[in-house]
Amino acid sequence: MITRREYLKLSALAGLALAINPRLLLADDSPRQIITRAIPGTSEQLPMVGLGSSASFSRIAGEGEVDRIRQVLEALVQHGGSVFDTAPSYGAAEQVAGNVARDTGLAERIFWATKLNVVPRGSEGGADPEAARAQVEQSFAHVGKDPIDLIQVHNMADVATQLAVLKEFKQEGRVRYIGATTTSSRTYDALEQLMRSEPLDFIGVDYAVDNRTMEERIFPLAQERGIGVLVYAPFGRTRLWEQVEGQQVPEWAAEYDIATWGQFFLKFVISHPAVTVATPATSRPEHMIDNLGAATGRLPDAATRQRMIEHIDSLG
Image (cartoon, rainbow, N blue to C red; front, side, top):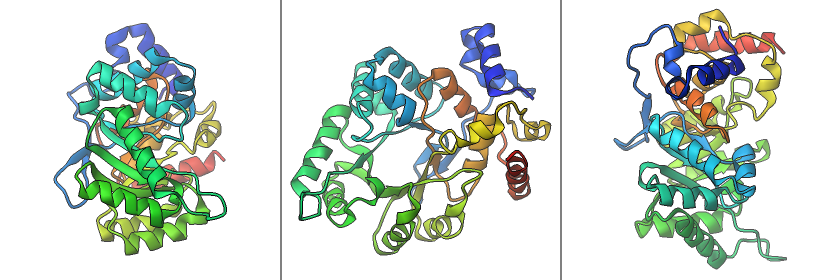
């Protein structure tokens, strides 16, 4: 089994055709379809691996690397993905990606998920509804798409005010789906309460092979309530990469069409039945394509998921 670094090096050496088609490195070279999952309560299917825009993506957007942004977005769409997750608070990510998507004609092929997070007003402590509406309008301007597919209240910030604003936009038909996000354990309980009290379409949460808190209450509740789940930080940010540094992907992983560690981590995440889409951030098109390889072939069953957990734990 090859490492992600070796995998990508081989792809580069083999030329563009191989670099944009990771399955050619697998033993089974039969045509593969991207695995999709329905948004709960609908017949709309989403590819189970998408693209996030925090971290390195946000950095290169801020540095004006427009061509790199274009390459990553094109890699997403041309190889079967569609979900792009961003936020006004991710530096220049939303604006630069929106400009690229409009200029390249990709906007209508992308399931655009962004967020709402207005800074609270001084001593009053709450978000200004008018500022929240203005931020949503700014997202429309950036994306050039109306309706926007999904807008979520970012990090559970003043949900009472900001979710109410999103409900208005949804009722007007300008936002298709709404929800709320958190990657902080301090607000998991608040998210659970919100899921019970509000008709959310989606939540966005952190989940990884070594970070499985969501399996305890949030994921079962999402399934019970028919709420879609976007997964953030499926690589534990950099934590999992550091843990497997210098290690080979186990040979048995090939039984589930796993060629690299990135695919190992993502296959674990998307094989949970509550997960709709995983959205790892990247600024490199070859990594985007490698990630999409996780949404092809076979998904781990329950026994294999446990084996994956135990293998990662053994490397700690």
